[in-house]
Length: 405
Image 1 (cartoon, one colour):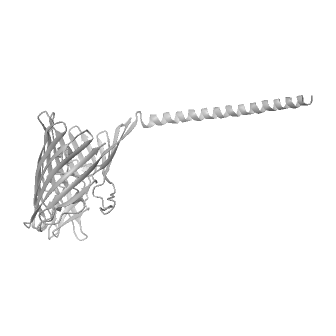
Image 2: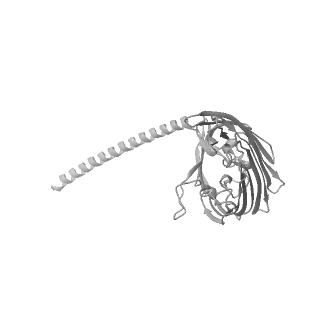
Image 3: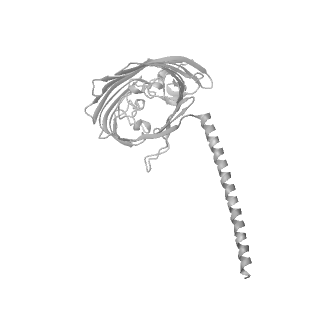
């Protein structure tokens, strides 16, 4: 009989405990509901303040192997970038011929990341791209490890572009379809930081300045400019042909601690790509001229000016041209042929080793078994002549294999 009061007490205690637990659970649920409601309110507020749309990111690039055999007529070939791809200014002159040299490289392989965000203020697009060219980190003894470098790093918003990419002076669509990294000596080829404004067919830009001059007969670089390079470009054409006319004005300056001098020069570039027939063939052309081309053409094949004995800068008249034809043999095979020349009217202050003229020739055959693969071979011939009369040439056979993703 004594068990009944004890049992009743336990039941009462259990009911009280259950009620306490239920009250605690209800309080926790109400707290969570309040927090979720607050988060929803904050998210809605942020979305209304930042964007009415969404963002997206894509990744791509390619892996490329270049295998080359090069023979120089007048000396030993260059090391570094000059053996990875054709840099005509590194062709040796005035020496004895050398034995053929074999070189493999995968440094041109690259990776890019693109993003875009739709906002109430307009679409914002960004592009970041890297490869491994011109890296001084690695060597060919054991690992062939090379550090990445920035190729492009820019974003565009409405009519504006900010960051590093191809110079506005350069019509990239006219560049020949070659296996060599750059190609013809007469091409404009330059990337640099800039601010660009585009309106219809017009583009206007201010870009990073740099002066390359001959000083005491030696090629020298100066970073003493006060004014950015200024460029205007007009794109025209329709249907099967597109063209561009670019005009540049820029300051060439130096400060060597004793003298501070500057001169102002100009350059123009006319470039185009014209479709030929209905099978995908095209003709690509470029003509450049001016007294301030310098580093803009042929990987700085010529300097833009020379420092005279009195300290003044004499600008150098230059020109460059190339013509390239691409032919599609069928859906899988294609070829490109490029012929180019460039010349400078150097003053005496440039010295006897200053390059006077160049010529290059490229011809290739490329097989595309599937959309992601390119396999091909290319014949490359380059010639260089300097003011002293010495000359030299390179004959190169290149095989390339590329996988794009």
